[in-house]
Length: 426
Ligand SMILES: NC(=O)c1ccc[n+]([C@@H]2O[C@H](COP(=O)([O-])OP(=O)(O)OC[C@H]3O[C@@H](n4cnc5c(N)ncnc54)[C@H](OP(=O)(O)O)[C@@H]3O)[C@@H](O)[C@H]2O)c1
Image 1 (cartoon, rainbow, N blue to C red):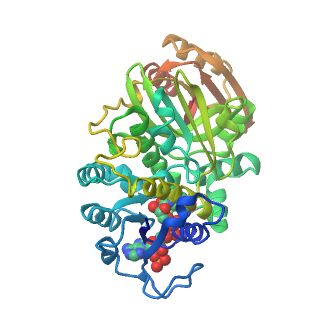
Image 2: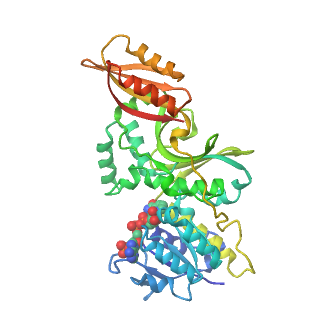
Image 3: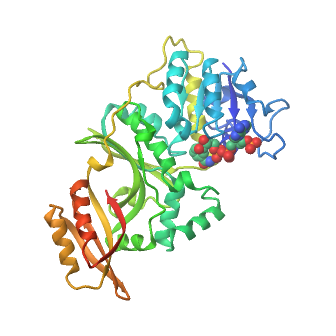
């Protein structure tokens, strides 16, 4: 059986995908059955690293999704529109979808998967989270026999690169971001990455798979890394933590929580040593314990390998007698999960105070936390600039309410000048 493929987009991931498909030797034998029929792009005259017979490339993407010969559409153009409309059109024409587009899936998953289930086609998205790291299919299949209670991951390479550079080379966020942009590790418009929105899309997808219910993307709280300063990185290091941007989905006493925020991770934690553009996803479940999936979270080849893996999974179903969709590949859930707000979670906090040099300030801070029942793991005064000192506190687990009330009291102490940063600790 020949599996006929239409590809929307021939940029980084699209080109990598074609390179694998055009060089099948030594890879999975099903690659030999795949044929790229059509490729859609925006600028037909742009030089390309791969070539095709005449007539394969087009700027008419609708003609690809409507082509009756094509079995599978690979959507690697990115963005919400026209990707969403083209995916829905292809599904309506009975075509399977492979996509790397986390934004469209996290925001429009409901209509896309509902349409796919009705049409009897698959929408696979291994490349959308963690680039080359297999995590979507493992969550659907091998990890899915466990009761999963937490997924926590470094799922944005750009922010992990910036935080790693701030730690290892030193420097402020804005300077390191500019360097990352010059090196091609950050986009010209870095918003989706540095404000945690891309990680928010990805953790919403992982949470849906881990807990078996849809996630309202707008209910996922996202805080990025713009406010992380060199001072926080240095203090975290002194206290034996790394600062990482984590996407976290967990079952808590209060309910399911899905969120993205910068987090102090103890140096002994497996996520602390994931540096640079690498990604890692820690999955904790019962009776499994913890598994960490680690590897390249982006890049042409790695991401394309995930795209082609999905093509292989679909190719394996084509030509088989299958009255129903294979539940190991299709999306089985239909209901939304209720998420609990960050404010109702228990957690540990790191907070940095700038104080005037008044004796007894540390004692006063300690009493304010103590009065609210917030236990302190460490409290240190580091550095002195003129008449200003910086005091850093790391708490034990507490409720957000008690912590905020203690902070309100501390903010009113005459010795306290400002509270430049409050971070969560895993
Ligand atoms: N890059 C990565 O490492 C990576 C990793 C994981 C996931 N992803 C995801 O993969 C997807 C693709 O990313 P990418 O980095 O490969 O993007 P890219 O390099 O910017 O390529 C996008 C491609 O889509 C085409 N395109 C975009 N809008 C179009 C339109 N309206 N009509 C026709 N063609 C259009 C472009 O055509 P032209 O070439 O003519 O401009 C280009 O070939 C995104 O969803 C991204 O989030 C990327």
